[in-house]
Each structure stands twice: as C-alpha cells, then as structure tokens.
Image (tube, rainbow, N blue to C red; front, side, top):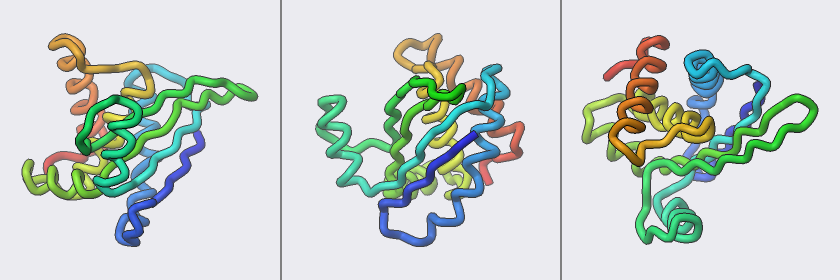
Length: 147
C-alpha cells in the first residue's frame, strides 16, 4: 500500500491527519475484498480550488466536499486507484453541522473517496444504501464514530 498525502491547503494543522490514511485504506480494502497492492493520493485543498476542479471535470459550478479521480492503471503489480481531493473548508463545515470531530469527518470523506475509486457510487437509492452502509461498517470497525 502506497499513499501520497499532499496538503495544498497551506494549513499545517492537517499534517497529523496523514496517520489516519493507511488504517482507513486497509479497512476499506478488507471490506470490499480487494488486495492491498494499491497506490492512492489524497490531496487537501480549500473551497476555491475544489470549486475549480468541480467545474472543470464535472461541469458543476460550486465547491464540493470531496472529489475522486479514478485511475486503475497497474504497474509492477500495483494498482493506482487514483486521487482523492478533499476541501478542508467543507470538512470543517460538515463536522460542525453533523456534530462530528474533524477526525471523524476527515475519515468519512477519505473512506467515501476510497470507495469511489474502487467503483462504488450513489446515483441510485440502492447504490447509496450500499455505499453508505459500507462507510459506516468501515468507520465502526476502526471505532471512528461521532466523536
């Protein structure tokens, strides 16, 4: 497992969150029965930057909380899952709105992104139910609840 963590938000407080990425990915891969020979990038940005990405790649002219850019290339037996981009501004807002800790909201968004890279989506009620159930199971397995 290879995880690249890029903090482009210019806020040093997020540096310590890198330690959560590996356990979250390991548990996600375990739940979806995928081998751990993967690489992924997680990038933290502000609303303005994720807004630009959302407009450029999804033609949606508004910021969002998380975007996933699947790759799927395999080199030397390692599958590059792709990139996850998270808005730290949205992360803070949602943590406050849902009365979660920043760690819990960060973990939720990371797992959400990992699942998208692994082919899960939430366009239909059935897909949403499956994806959100998986997210809850993964976070519960790591004892990351509403704390």
